[in-house]
Length: 129
Image (cartoon, rainbow, N blue to C red; front, side, top):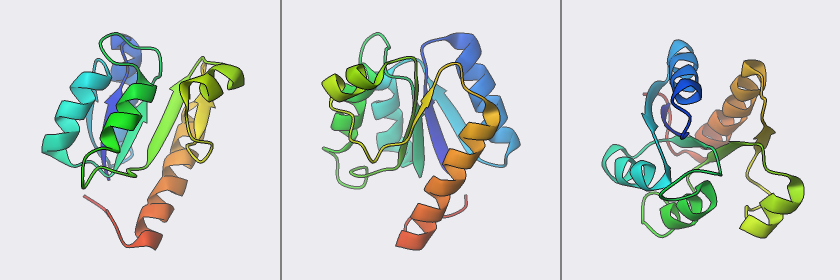
C-alpha cells in the first residue's frame, strides 16, 4: 500500500515511516495535516496514518479536508493519538476510524493496517503498490 504518515514529532514520524516501509509499504511522512493534504493530492495514497494534535493543521481537520477531494474522500485513516475518547468525540472523529492510543505498539499498527488493507481489497479499491 501507499501510506502517508502525519506526525509532528520527528523521531516518531521517522520510526513509523521506517517500520511501515519495512513491512513492504511505500511510505512518506508529513510534519502536519496541511503538508499531508498537499502530499495526498499528488500521491493518491491508499491509507493515512495520523496524529491528531499537530501544528498548522490538526489531524481532525486534515481528515475532513481529505473528504472534500474526489479520489481522497473516504480514504482509510488510522489515528495514533494521546487524545481521550471525549476529545475524539469533540474533534468529530468518526467512530469507524480506528484509533490507537499513544504510547502504541508496532504490532497494533500492523494489525490495524492489515484490517484497512483487507477493507481496501474487499472494496476493490487500492491494492498493493
